Image (cartoon, rainbow, N blue to C red; front, side, top):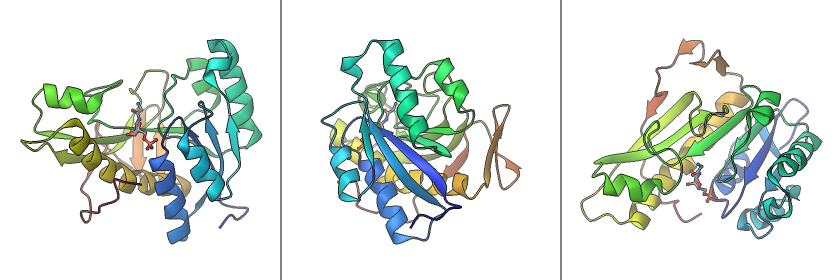
Length: 226
Ligand code: GAR
C-alpha cells in the first residue's frame, strides 16, 4: 500500500518482467517501505507491461526503435522524472544508460544482473558460464554507474552449476535467486539501511566487501516461472 512516506520506485523493464512481478508480489505479501509508482518499458510488447497493468500500476512506453540514442534517453529521462521516483530499479531493461543520465540520479539506480559480477558482464551470461566450465553461477544486484554492469555490488547469491545443466535449467535456478534477492535489496534501500558513498556500499553502517553481501536462499523456492 502506498503511503506518503513510502519510497517511490520506478521499474524499468524490457521483456517478460518476472523480476517486476517478484517486486509486485513482495509489496502485496509484506508491509513494505516502498511502492511501485510506475513501470517504463523500452519495448511496447514487453509482457511486464501487462503485469503492471494487472496490478493497477501506471505504465509508460519509450520505444527505443522510435528514437535515435540521444532522443531515446531524453524521452526516458522525461518519463522517469514524471513519476518523481526515490529509486529507479532496472529489471531486464536492456538499454545502456549514459553517464549524463546516471549522473542525474546518483546512487538512485539499481540493476540486477544474472552473473556473479565481475564475471560475465553483458549478455548471454548463462551460456558463457556453461562454456567456461564454471561450477558456480548466480546473480548480482548493484548500483548503476556509467560503467556497464560495473557499479558497486550490493549483494550476490551463488547457485551451483550441475553437470547436466543447459542454459534454461541454469537460467531457472538463477531466476529463483533473482526473485528472492531483488525485493530484499529494494526494501533495504527503502528503509535507508543501504548507502553508497564514493562507491563504498554500507548496510546498517557496515561496510560491504567488493562483491557485496554473499547471501544464500533461505529455502529453495520454485518461483522461476513467474
Ligand atoms: C533477468 O535475468 C535480469 O537479471 C537480466 O534480464 C532478465 C530479465 O528478466 N538483466 C540483465 O541481463 C541486465 N544486464 P525479467 O524481465 O523476467 O525480469
